[in-house]
Length: 431
Image 1 (cartoon, rainbow, N blue to C red):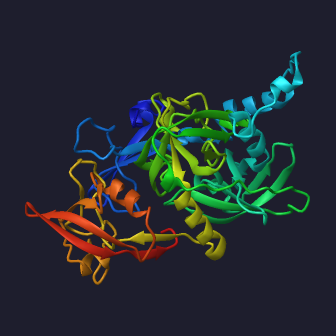
Image 2: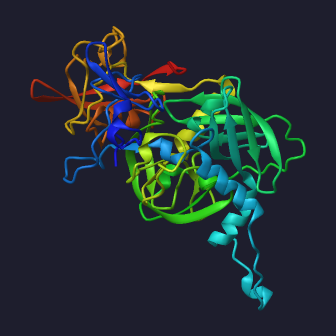
Image 3: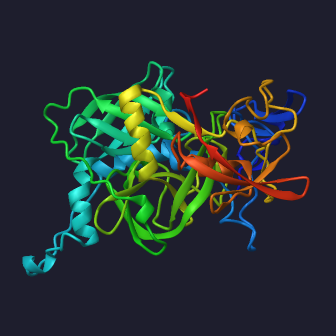
C-alpha cells in the first residue's frame, strides 16, 4: 500500500497543507512531522506517491514507490517494538539440545546453514543516534579488512552530523564507527570502525548482480526488529525493478533498478546482505513494499513487516558507489542533463516544459541531452532496450551506468519517434 496522509497513523485534524512554488502541494502532520509532497517536480525534490504496478505489456515491471520507513527500526519515541525485541533476544532465550548422532548434524558448506555460519561473523548490527537523540537500528556487512562497513544511507543518516554510530558483531563485540561517505540518491553509505585492531575482519565475497537470474535462490541476513543474526531465504522474484524510495521525512529520494526477492525482509534488515546460493553478496537490502499502515513514520506499532516484496540495491552498483565514497568521500552520479516530470503516467519520462522549480533549465545548455538534440517537452520512452514509463524509472535506469557511458535514448516529439545517442555526464555530491 502506498503511504498517504490518511494512512500514516496520526489524526486527520493534525494535517496541514501548504503550497510550494505555486505548484507543489505539501501535506504535513503537526503531531509527528510526517510529510508528503504532490506535483510535478525535479530530480532533487520529493515526488508524488506512484500507483502500484499495472498489468499489461506496456509496463517494464512497473514503478514501485517502496516505503523505506518500513525497513528501518527507529529509536526514540515510537521505536519501542524494535528495541524491546532486541533486548529480549539476548536475555530471555532458551537453548534446547537434541540427542542423536553428531555426524547427522553436519551441514555442507553450500547449504543455507553452511553459508549462514560463514557469513554471520561478517554481518553487523548498526545503531545510529543523532545529536538530538533520534536514531534507529539497521544492518551492515564487512567490506574490506581496513574496517569499512557497507550499509544504507538511511540507516546512518541520523548520526551523520554530530551523532554516534556503533557496529556490533555476532560475537557481541561492539565498536564505535564513523561515516566515511553517504550517497542519498543511491541509498548507499560506507562507515568505518574506529578501533578495529582486535576485530577479525573477514569481508563478505561480492558476486555479480548482472549474472543474477529470476528464480535464483537468495539468503538475507539482518536484524529485523532488532533481532540480530536473523537469516531468511527466498528467490529472486524479479530483476531490474524500478524503485523510487523515501524515508517519509522529506529527505532526497533514492532510486534503484532493484533486485526483487521474496526472502523475508523487515524493519531492521536495511543495509544487510542479500546473498546467492554460493554465499556471495548480490545486493544490499534496502526497501520493502508495505500492505499495512507502516508508511507513516519511524518505529512504533504502525510499522509493517514483510509481504514478500523486498528490494535490494544490485551489488555491481553498490560496489562502484562504495569505491567513490571511500576514495572521494562523495558519490558520483551519471546524468543526461535534463529535468523530467516525476508523475507516473506510464507513457514515459517527459522533460519539463518550463524548467525546474528552482529556475534551472529543463534541458541543460551544452549538456548531454542538449548536445543529443533533446528539447523541453520530449518524452523519453526507452534507454537502450529498457522501456521507460516514468521519470523515476529513467533515473533508476541511468543510475545503473557510470559517467562517460554511451546510451541510446528513444523519445517522442509531436507524435513522432526519434533516437539519439547520449554520452552520460556526471554530478558529484548530493544537492
